[in-house]
Image (cartoon, rainbow, N blue to C red; front, side, top):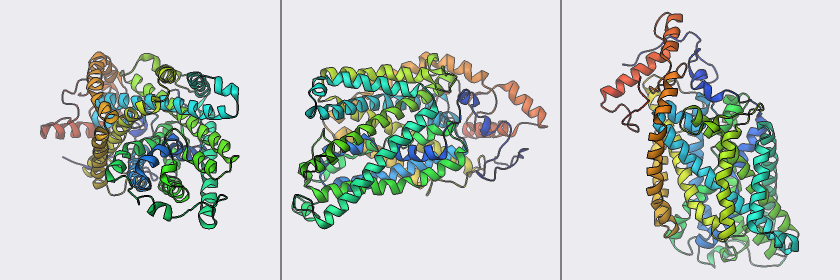
Length: 549
């Protein structure tokens, strides 16, 4: 079936991708209309760092240390390897075709509209619930300063959460350049604080703390070893560690608004594994070498716990401001990401039309405001159950993250398979070890889902909630299916190897202009014929409503 296709515009030397007037530069081009390429290399580098460092480390690590002890650093390292592989898979897809729709757009390209619908809404659930976690974390951090101010102490936690939401949404509505600058400085503050802690931590481990308390590996051996509470608690916290890495995929969303994305993004991604090793594993190692794991607790940053314990009272409020910055950064990134994802889905007919709205500054304010409305639920949670708000939504956010990461892995796997058939040419920047690393990553994500279910009662109830989510997705799909089909049939140009409907007149014009059938049309036709011949035209979309020519 496979044959070589002549491409009139030649081969891209940077990416190894065949380019034509109708190839990857024009796939779903309507999704990118109105966006401005305002993000530069400096901003993207820090966004990549900031995406990997958030409230999961600054706040969540305290409770996980108390639950699993020093084994947390092993879990961080283990999960970090797969987080990096997922990021490499996304990076290869981004080099193939930068898109503000990120992996949702890739799901549409390689699996069809239904897959894009499911992955898009599940990812939106991730960030919508994460934003609730973030406003809760912000409120907790601000309330910490109540020990210094009676005024702050008197402010209800829900009021602080609401104020934080209004400020961050306002920032996102200005322009993508403002978002990039804010994320740059947020990330710089987070990285700077961690570097200072790492330097001071090493000094304290070597020379001792001001209080003269025991330090070093003796704190691990004298308090139950690496697994003081057994192996099961260490495995159960894996779901929370996955949540800590949420946000690394943000670089995919920024690709549609980044200058020279194909050159800049690979450089940013390649440094992530080092950051994970240094900032996550290094920080947790120092924390357990400086204090017994029993000294840490949920609801308080472990860094604040450490500095307060050794009597450096001035460092505690400074670190609290840093973790407050981390939460603001995460909330800011969530609003940015959901705005772009909802816009991409809306342009395909699978999200409310209001999400298509873009300001003259290139801000998809429709999607941002829709997410902000849902985040108000977090304010309500803080009003009635402030103590449980963080944990209630944590597991639900993890489900959304797993769904998004699985979509990235599957989309890349399909891309790899099509490239093996000669229908795509992979760029030089590739996911290492594919397809075996794809299978290993999918197995890892399945393991995390099982572990969530074992975390009774919260995790068990989280999985049980899918009995509500899945029917809602089915109802939502059938409600918008006719609109998705209408838009698909009116779409202009090539839509990738999977036969998502494109305008036939446009394909005919390309064929006539190029002296025959357009190469991309040939690719789509051949892939579709091969799928039909195999008796499985689309394993993830069996009825193919709106997806076939």
